[in-house]
Image (cartoon, helix red, strand yellow):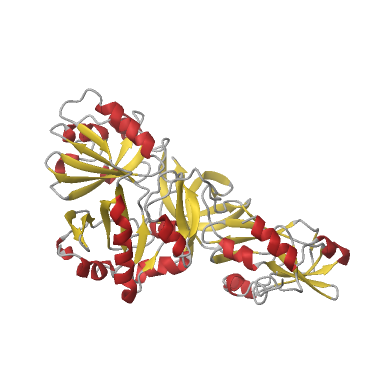
Length: 134
Length: 379
């Protein structure tokens, strides 16, 4: 049951980050459900200046998202070297709310082990997961 | 993603206001607040915040507590309980004050209305209502000519706030609203429902708070939402209430005010009347504190780098901790990251002075800012 809320070509972590793999490049963001839970996003603390210099292990902390009401940590759903950070989010953090699967993406990583994606949830499993936890 | 202060989950044991079903129907996100299941937002905190600053917002504040203090002994009783001078109130006038422990620590902050000779209504915070009621009852024991009644459950309260509040409310009542001055009230009727119409609020905007019977507050809410539609009125939740009051520099009990903090430290000296001629509870402690100098002082801070300050983050200067924030966030109207917090005696508190806020261990540049951050344009 893929919908606009959970696109079929994405994989989801239980911490509500999504991953889309194109070749060996993984694009990462947070889910529609997550941005709704957060409410208005006003600031992102991302590894802005670390592209090409840093790698993340699956499950490791890569940044923080600040909504009007709370701070939440962000975790890498897969392991890989940091390729790029979405510069648009510096001045337009609201893109995370407006387009969580599009312009609101956060990072790209060069994945070290594509098999890690198999451990993540597909759209159906994530939809069931968010229904249970909500 | 993991939220460190995410919305609490609903629980069957939480209290609900008479407007609960309306909040659900409006699509509100409900969270736990002080034992109540309350709307934190409807359309979004920023949207609601903007509505209140530019047009108007409607808040459910039925969770607040109300006590009636009545009888010939009512004035003396209140004068002994609070640091502000209740004796200066005329009929239909209100006063902001606190109740203090003997050591000066703040048990709660509250508003006292004089409704008539020997007739007062005291409005207290939801989270402290039971504690406050016990405190009032304990100190009333044995007093002559004094009747205390806890009317929290049967009292409905909604706040209509924003520059269009008067225009929205006036067609619904015969009471001439422009004649009600700030921190004054009038008994009247709104859409035929008996109310105390009070020109008070917690947003930094003009506006009214309407006290009525709990069973009638739903009709009042519906009528106001309907009447305000053309003016751009939005229902607004606790999220916007918090960002609005932070910009306005208002203390929130549990943050800027606690049992460990005195009103003098909180910058509320203007509400403390040491010379009112009554030995109120906590007076000796405040006199001594004034003589010795304050142990800490409430300040505003504004980040000069990117980041979002939050409660409990340390305030530092050259690596030395000066104090900690009690509230913070991105100020929607100002578009700046701001906070309030305490700096201990000896630390820099001059507006404009450079400090840092430690955000997840990293010092982020900030300056001490004058309070309030936001003052509404006076018309």
